Length: 101
Picture 1 (cartoon, rainbow, N blue to C red):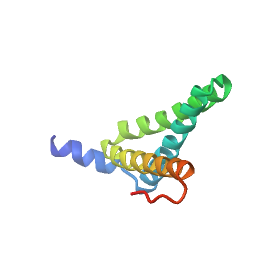
Picture 2: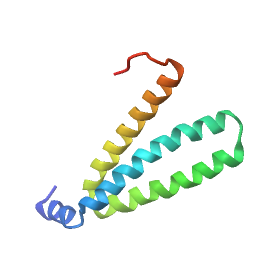
Picture 3: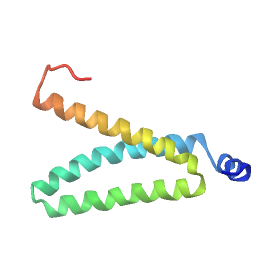
């Protein structure tokens, strides 16, 4: 990677936008869980609606990291946190009181 590319990535990087992306991808992973549940329950309208909303969030992330590859970091962090939170929440529903890591 050349220095111009790195400089250009920082020029187009914004901390408020990065925070918004992190939150958006946190929510997106929660939506993935609900989407999967709706598909397995054979509820086409709910699954299709959630799927369409998810694509808006995904497009927001893609448009952001096209401007600056540095936005991949908040996307990954938001995704990790969202998945961890949803799995932990679901596990607590199935096994209340059981300690989770």
